[in-house]
Image (tube, rainbow, N blue to C red):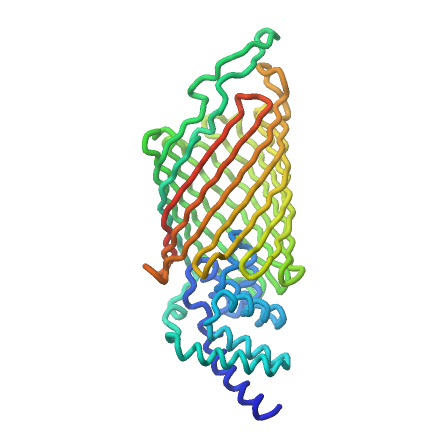
Length: 435
């Protein structure tokens, strides 16, 4: 190796050592903090698995891309690590330590001129930037929490019918009927508060345990009988290597409405994802759960769901997803048992360093097992759900860990029985705080 290359290697090593011990010191999302902890404890495969198990598009952000680069580098996949570092630098060009790490990998692959260019930019940007805050790394722990407070606006808090009349059978004769006003849609606004606490425990080079506690409450301004509260616990076993990540998660949740127990739901879900290339991955997911209805035990049911799909990164800022899902409910009340299937498409976009956008649309066609004697036709439904969410990280402008979240969801059910037609607009805006 020439003297010039030796000098480059020494400079790259000096800068990249700082990077490897303080990467993502400014990360705020709980998943990013947990992935950083795994890297610090020598668990790169688990870090990649944790980032891959997130379904909120976090992997399109500069911090997550940098973490993915570091964990793939530690796994020995230099090509994939270089790709992630390059994508991160397109979002945050002045990340000098990322440039230093990239330069070190260029040197290892014999790309001397590229390494020299990256080191020059790394040194110049480092001289203009602030020193890395090492205290955040030293104070990191295995536990994270997130609190959210928001205002909600819901046009249909009771899942009521959007129709006013229907046709029913009376002694076998079809007659028009007026739908009771109490069964129609009721709108209201309110306040929602939630807390999520998570604990990550490494179990080995490829496994970790992620336990979580979730508390949530929505208090409506006028219709207090529809106030909702829930408490849930879950324990996910994570697995990850250079190309595959997976999880299996048992969970238990109790939901309350109007101060009374509504349902208790116990189940287990699983997900596996495999990267086919730097941009393309495929995944499979499934869930089996039993739902016990508090005061109406005969409505208790088994819920089953499976889905297959793929995700494709269009570039460093945009990722699309397509999936097809099948689900069914087997209820103690046969008229509520159904089978449904349909596609879903999604788009995750990083609009700026601290702004992300998620869009999704889902459709499914549902058929019910049995028909009530009151209705002249079988129950079949077309269901549509359109959702949009924007997340803004306010850490650099206000308080470390603070974020703004705005969400809108439109859902519509077109049923062969007008009683079950419904339409809903739900919007919320609020603040989140991660620590």
